[in-house]
Length: 298
Image (cartoon, rainbow, N blue to C red):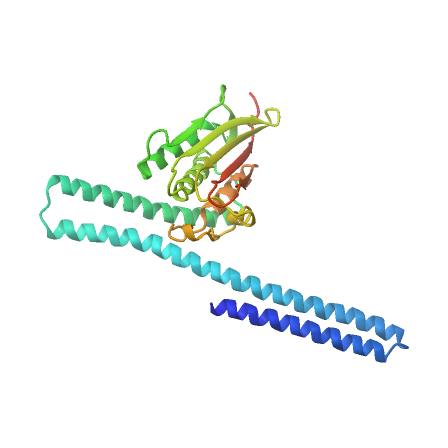
């Protein structure tokens, strides 16, 4: 709230200074019509002043918004780290202080393993996003059947959310389609896409995945469609920014770092591909289209 007030203050200040500069310049021109050269110089300096004021205001507002995003990111990461640690500690203290049946112990171990997986996932996401900013080259360049990392990601998400076997439905082409890249990073792309699709689908937790050849065999498309909360048209590009979180009220309770789709776009771009989001509006689901260059035929 404080930063928002600051943004409004600087915006009003910039507009006021601009209006004052316009008034002074117009008055100066009227009083000095005979001084043509000076008038031209005045106009140039006036334009420079106005440009500086506008750029200064834009910069201040962007910095305030960036700081707000950083604060939200820190709060989200703190929560994502603290919650599983507190849970693991609680179950460990219970195991140490109480006599439990073998079944209860097994249940506690399963819960702690899930919490440790969540903790590891958050740490890896932050580290991957940090590496993505360095524009590092691919760690591995292998010929990959695109359906393999997609299937592995679908299996991991199915286990993570205890989904049914048909909740992530993959439609494969008749012949395998190959791309070149790092299998682990490609799996990370679809882990994040499937994870988002499930998290933001509170009612209909079904995801349809289609793999197809495109551009006469020169490209490989993967289409991921969910039945979730959908996106407003203004958010279709913003969701790939670092720390950005969907503004929909229904998404407020969904935890995350705001790095998932940023990481996805970075990896896809590093593999020479591109990604775009499509949605018919709020409550009507979201479609992600990922396009990779096809691997050269042997």
